Image (cartoon, rainbow, N blue to C red; front, side, top):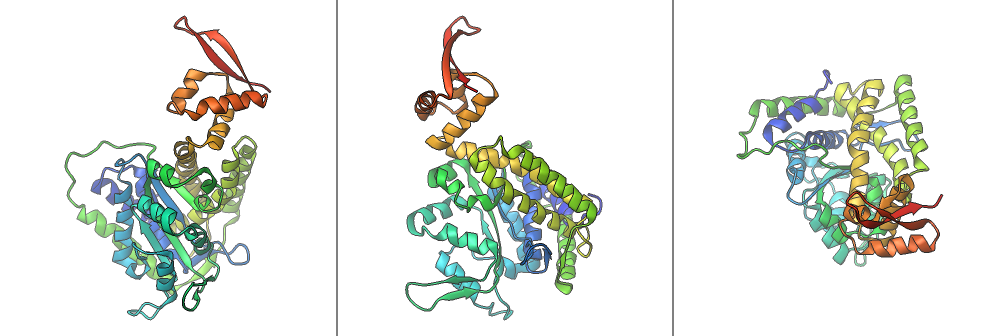
Length: 389
């Protein structure tokens, strides 16, 4: 992307500043751009337009891949260039809504355009689970951007006019599985996220590298120019004919896959397509914020979304819900529809999950699966599961 004004300079800085996956660098850059774009650019589609706000989560194993570091690096950028758009990090939902509803005392401007950074999102999930069952619903409404009214048990109601909220979170798989259940994947909250897992790890550095000052200054210069351009000329944009054709082709491609997907994946697909449009807007902003969203921007968005975010979502669902009977039921059926598998292989796939026996028995009772005994390559009899078409 030769004409990139911020994304590529930031990724150049990122790969020299830490050893996290390059995909995390792009995620960090896109979330920073989302922060400076809130309320300044949107796509002129639908009654209220498609906003550039994103909920994005970096996921992976515990203490691996610089998830939290990547979130902090985005926060550092936005603090440097547009600090009033960085939201509070330690809050209750009531406290956040009250904070957003009041004007910034320094600028006298509304605080309804913010990025929430959650570098330890597992701790936030634990608080949600213990104290505030309504938090996920409230965060969904903030994401959707309609005027938000919070009725308080004590005191007057609190109103946020047209919130523009992004969230950049980092969370380990084990924390997600500990604090979320299967139903949380279908209640709308997690469906609003783009997930980025470390698909390609880089070699770890034994010693933290020196801060790449030159690359940092180049990235901040590009971001500052973009912020000023966006602030001086707030407007909606649309897609060019070629950009729209490419997006429609991709939308058709996703729709053709839906029939073979699990229920969770089918629900996610439509929100995923909206997120691709949001990414297209951000890529176009990086290239030329005053121009319509062209083919190149849509192509960059599709490449990042489908190469990184789509498989990351699949992996995250599988890793965080494999202990849940319904999820394991769906995943087992999907695998067996592709080919017969020895029960031993399934057990290895799901890390010896004890629920697997119950799932197999249930599939047999339903008439979906039959079990046959075969001699394997080692000369031993083993159970092989067949899907009944």
